[in-house]
Image (cartoon, rainbow, N blue to C red):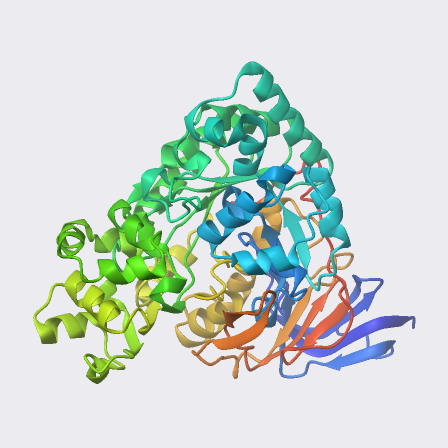
Length: 575
């Protein structure tokens, strides 16, 4: 029998297409699956992996990330590849690095620090800026070493700023000449393999504010241009559109619906929840998704990962800016922040402005913040307790308790918080089982000093093994097969002969990881980031047939590629 490059022997194969799991071998040659079956005993290979007692499944496909900068200093895009991600869709929310005129580079990096908390010093140190246009950026990204595969949106905010200028992009629709330029730019990008375009639509409640505290263009400008550009993808019969448009406190579903109608293409909508602060949020979205399906519109929604958590000091983090009153605090320098903590006028306004529903979709309500270290004698007794417990014990409003704690500690209090509240298995069962809601929405590469949204290994550990919300077969379909269908990737996301060999191999019984972020000092500019630790039980991660991680450790080449979505005319087959 033929000698292969790699054989994975004896694992429980879960194919990502809902076929019942079965025990067998997988042979890999030239980066692709060459054979699957129980009858490969006579075959040999350059390398063999013993997978007896382990699950062999497709690598996860992540449909929302921001690794545009991080890949320049971390080709493994950790921690997400540690947890089984092999393909990711970057340049999400309409933010990215091309097209950008040379005189706008510094402003763009400042914007990325504000919107996605990618430190400005890290961007300055890591980005070579050898490009201006989107085609030049794409060539640069292709040449950048990487361990995982990437698809890349063209970001609508950068397109608008490039053509209309920053003020025009924020205030008006394009002229006929400008629209022609935007369409030409979009079509050129699509012809080179762009996944489509992305943007956010959050009005004035967005935590995606510009570096000067003003909204980003697509959040507030008239939306008619979105529909015209969406129709351009419809004309091509190619590409997808991603829109961040619906979190507690904001509902721009009408814009999403009009984009879907204009394009006829798949639209990825964010975010489905569930949120403990607003337990009906995901139900409204599910009913809306059902209506979209009935009307023949291909709208899908991402969900919030369970058990996500944040670790931060308040001057590292800006999620509070979704409430406009708190933008004066978020955008202030360190000394002014400290002054505001004791300012009676500011504190009075804070009591009226605080809205736990809005903050529930943006880092959690303050009652749930856990005090890791108060770092002030005035409140050291509350280490390990919540801000809600502190407020109750001291007889303070939640806002007075928070700002006094921050002021007394000179902003040095360390917090953790559930990213979307304490997960309720019953609520998660509702969203996991909806046919148009997918789980992998990592936000990887963003908020690097605060939070990692770990998806696949957490879904498998918590939702499959512990809570039994979904079967193993259904979860792997959600984690890879469904994403491949939405993107039109006929040769990824499932373990089939001929498909690209993107694979995770793990022990479901021991899959777990510590709930304390690692502090890594690998960020350029002398900075640090927080990273969820590599999971115990994740034995191998394989990309394009090459093992890249063994037990969370890099072991070899960087075989990741920039890949296009499905070819023109392809269509998702998801229900």
